[in-house]
Length: 267
Image 1 (cartoon, rainbow, N blue to C red):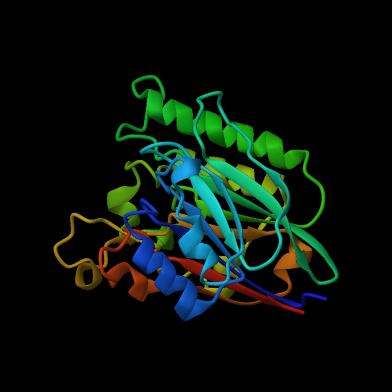
Image 2: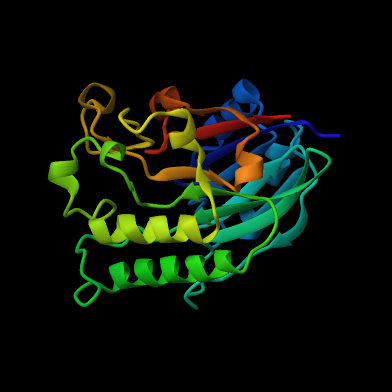
């Protein structure tokens, strides 16, 4: 029986460009399942052989050239793999699969939610309208889902006041507007999900997973946002022993602008 499960979610911002730090993640932290977003890679060009050499024999991808893309790199078998299209846009923003845990199966959903552009008005900005439609479809999807599941990914929204470096300065900025924050909460509640990062990190603690490339010294200025999330249905969430942001990965060579988030479950 698999009674321990370590899952990492990471927006890698081009898996081929950053393959060395993907390999470093697998070697240093040994997740059972690494969930990647924004792989920017067609399925046929994914570096599967290099991943397999590190013991990750189960690789499932949903990608396209130059944009979006999600993937699972797993040491455990992946079953009932699903690649759902949202908003009829042809985008590769979701993949799901079952993995063994606690004598049964838990379903992992890996999402890359649209960023939404710069103007938080769906009438003036079709990218923001797309983001809101995507969240609507996620909510409807999870209302009908039964069973134990985990949702991870770059959800491109920092929902709480201490999920951003300045609530006051960012409240009208896409990713932290009240409309987006409420819509993400609606999605989470539709699936009865527990925000496991906030389960382990108090609401009064500022936590970030993304720091802009534009900052000259991202670590010192520390103007971050929590855009990456790990949600679990209540029965699964009760088994989380630890959830941590691997902040130092933001400073690795040729880094992504996102840091990985690692959740460890034990029975």
